[in-house]
Length: 328
Ligand code: TRP
Ligand code: SF4
Image (cartoon, rainbow, N blue to C red; front, top):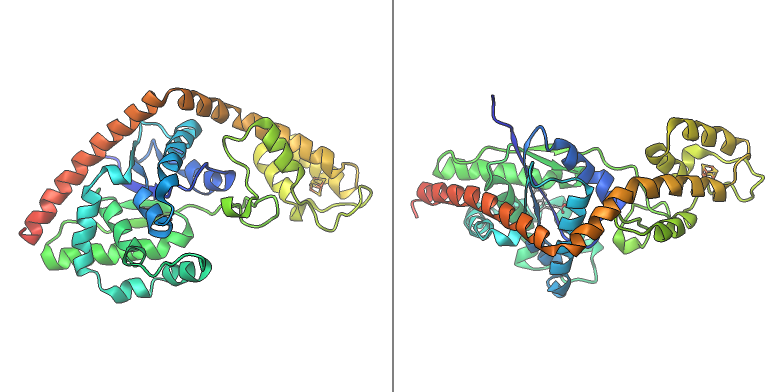
């Protein structure tokens, strides 16, 4: 038997996961668990790079994130699940990599400038924020990952990771493979207001939402903007509710909605109710597991401890090799 290819990926703990996170990343991770040797971690140190003024939320968000992961189907039997800050070797490797990373590589990183522009309210002119991709490189190569499942927005970071690995190997000898980005096709799922689904836009549906909350959020969804009255025919092709039907409803309902909307035979209120019912049903098992894990914190602790043990072993071995290569 050939060994499974190792992949590594992380998420910053920003609170409860919504459907955008689920369809944009988590669903893909879940499906990779049987084919790959998966290391998935919660990047709490990365959360600190832009949230250093309010670190207080990070532990609760970390907790919420691992519970959402487990509830949605990441399995500790299949994957190694852990918290970044539990493995101190990430920090040591980050420091060593920072010695060999030219600052222009970081300054020209497109996400660096974007974020500084976008998050005007925060002072991101810090060393830690500039070094974000160096920490990310450490996260990845410390496990000698061959692949990194990410969205397209993360590709520049994986490119920097490859450059740093290459430079390390050139300077000190061959220790690290150069990982490939494994692109997740980006979720088409939009928020209730048709913008990208995001916590900060207040337009999201969360995996752990109650049926009532989902009903309410769905009722607020913007539909075909041209359809002002019930008697106007609609166009499902431009309607976000229809996108949700395509994911959560069966083929016969999808084609009924598709036809009846165009002939004004179904109204948006009813159409949304049908969709919400299916969405609620699809999320039922996730919501139940969420309650279960919230009631059994010790199970979650054990899972994280086991992940820490396994990841820690690999990380320590790599650091032993790294120190030897640098002759430290
Ligand atoms: N930068 C990633 C994001 O914002 C999170 C992350 C941190 C990550 N370390 C990583 C992703 C290592 C993949 C591999 O989504
Ligand atoms: Fe969208 Fe459904 Fe309304 Fe058509 S009937 S516009 S698909 S919500």
